[in-house]
Image 1 (cartoon, rainbow, N blue to C red):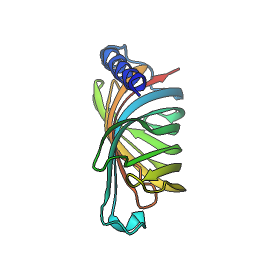
Image 2 (cartoon, helix red, strand yellow):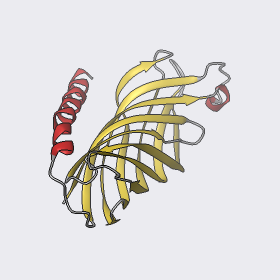
Image 3 (tube, one colour):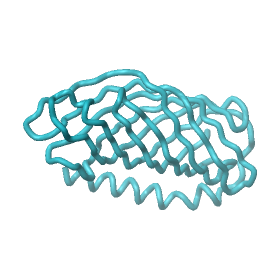
Image 4 (spheres, rainbow, N blue to C red):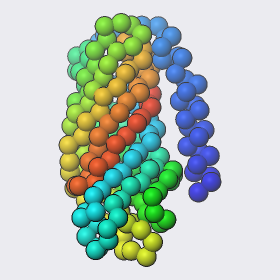
Length: 193
């Protein structure tokens, strides 16, 4: 567990060290093409009392670290089709009850749109669907619920260096899983080739 936490910290440090290059890189062309991206996120999962269906009166609240890895194709400047693998539970941050957690993963397919009124920073948004699988453990001594489904997802944020070959994205997203509400604060790098 300490090893994966160390890996996550190193990854976050590397992303932050590469951020100035995204903003200071020479302006690339506005042409279409392929890109790849990697990101890290802090996730917050919440569910109401009735969701657990075990007779308990406690709601589920959980925080964890996750990552995404993917790529896409930019058809025209500012509009792309994006495909990514999302890992929801790499390292536990905090939990209301001991032994309470949510772990899961999924594949996201989304339209990625950005607007670059300035060469340094511009807003971006993603909207699409994601197919997920999750294990929910509502607390100590309770059985794990295995869930699977497809739900809509939304994400919005700022893209630094939107016209550069490498971009830094900082965003906030909503990735629901059934009635489990998952909010994401993410930092990622996107490289065009």
